Image 1 (spheres, rainbow, N blue to C red):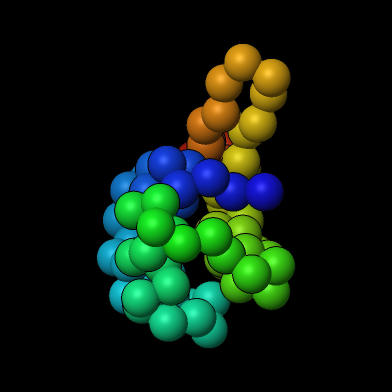
Image 2: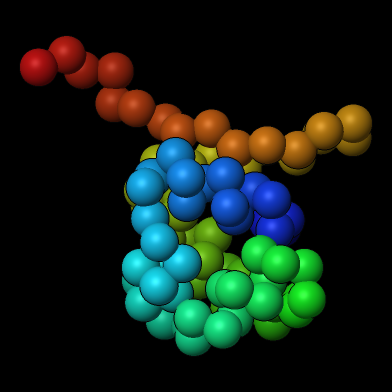
Amino acid sequence: MIAPGQCRAARALLNLSQKQLADAAGVSLRTVQGFERGDRTLHRLAMNAIERVLNDKGIVLITQTDWIGVKLKTSGNSA
């Protein structure tokens, strides 16, 4: 389950705007804005859609007992 700070951090790693994330996930811009501010909890479908978009772009959500975060998976291939 993604936290608001993880969403902001993931977008920053991917250089995605709130609008780009909202469009890709099929949710409203207000949904993303409210969630990231902590004003709104996401419905399960919206949360799954946002997590799926981020995951497809290489984001791994890290949730442990004493901390949370995100990391960006790279292919590891050099060009």
